[in-house]
Image (cartoon, rainbow, N blue to C red):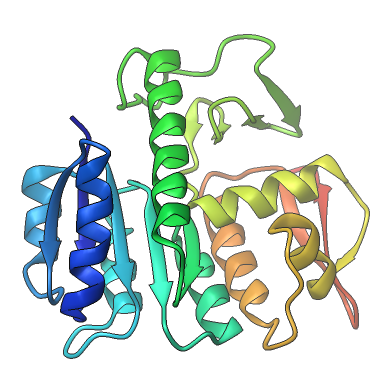
Length: 241
């Protein structure tokens, strides 16, 4: 039985979400605040996490940042503020999906089901949910860009047998730019085409994602790089090393 963690300081919201998930026969652990969440995630290893942004004490974005240092479980963030910057910050920090309050609980359940189907499919493909660095994708399931191997099937990037360890958003951006090698895109175009939504607020968070990808590529001496197109945006290119 899949285990779902739900974190929200609003008792009525917590009860509503928990009730709908239990109707689907999920095992649900609910939390009114996030102080004990990290330890519980480490010990009980939930299959999916629903995390509110606005909470007293430790907020959801802070918790998300810490969680992504040790787990890649699907995390669906919810926010009552309805600000686009919340959505973009959450995606940039590594959340898997985002839902604004008020929301239809049936839609939330549908998104949870979708996340769990992806996990199930991935585990069937791999035989388990852990990967050794040398466990490269089978021939034909990846494409090469310089000395970088990108697998769309397994959502991973390898350089000379070493997995790069990208977050979901880092992978999405690197994949898109690699599929359009040497073609420049503005920050606005990247947000719209990579993450498939219009954004009218701060777009500089794209810069933060690029910085993190660059650091990881340099560490493994990848020949693929993300170059700045001054006054416009970014492009992927291959350079000899």
